[in-house]
Length: 210
Image (cartoon, rainbow, N blue to C red; front, top):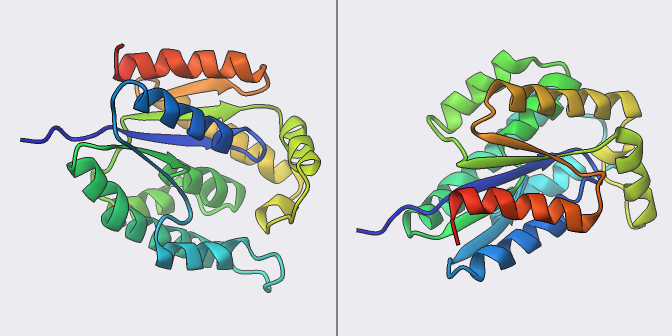
């Protein structure tokens, strides 16, 4: 019987370094002999990537918070059932750049839908689904937005939001982590990359001792 793989999710505001550290984590786990799939949200499947393009397009007319949440969960349900669940069942590990916590932070808190509606959507589309570990990359909003600006490139629809929006996102993530400390680890993403990655290694050691 194949042992189920572990599911790790990475959360945090803009510019927190999730993408860079996702690659680092993949390399660390593969060095321990594990097979690892790296994915992202919204996205992860052909259909979900098309939904992602709609969600991030700054040139589309504004959408309601409800529409945004429903699109997020449509992409997420497809992603989980088509990619994440089958991969875990094969014994491979999955690292996802964002998952359900992102909707609690962005649509629930910052968009004002509230946590109850997001919880209902999660229970309906992903009943009983829980990551084995969620790393929250936390840093001051102004630092994160400065990082986004410095890397150049196109700005997506979310990155156009004002600082108060991202402060609500940040506080929602911290509140989620405080409610379930055994499932979450908050990392100080304002530290040097080496310091952040040392903290990541310590968390990986908990799930997969060397």
